[in-house]
Image (cartoon, rainbow, N blue to C red; front, side, top):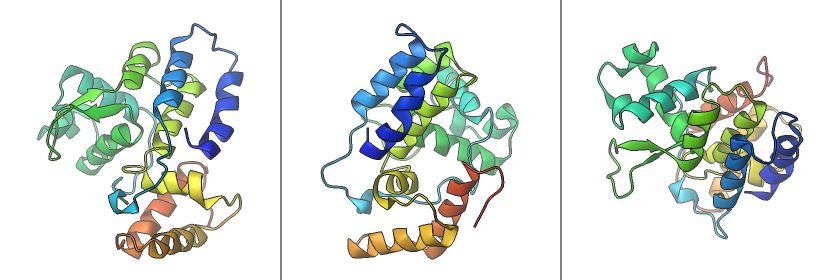
Length: 212
């Protein structure tokens, strides 16, 4: 687990009174912390931004995405999948993004990059079995660890929790700092509008009312 993420998240997880040493959700914490490591050399060329259709994670979305995948590996690609989940088409794409970015769902090994069959990850399997509706706060922390340590799909979150290192900031400062970070590494070119979308969704993910 990235140092900043581990420092911020592991104490609350261990402090949740409803968890015990034998609790399956705590088992998932152990699995997540064991498999999520920061690469010694990051490669921003592999990063991606603004894949969430400007939607932050909504209540019930991770359950809906995981439950659909548990029943059918191609469920979220179906033409009428948005009807089955009771959401709009853009929201469906957002659900697909979030279940993958949080590490709860993963492509089948060896599958192609275009609409690969999806399965629940080992952590996702535990959550789907023992806390599918995310009723335990610790389950949200597990998803957050997965997101903040996923440099490829959760790039903005990965950067914010592992490289930004500022506790008080405005949305435009987030955008400007990440832009500089990418330019200094002669990284991929990202449209300012994409960074702006990520910054706004990032803030909405944690604040009841977006502050800029």
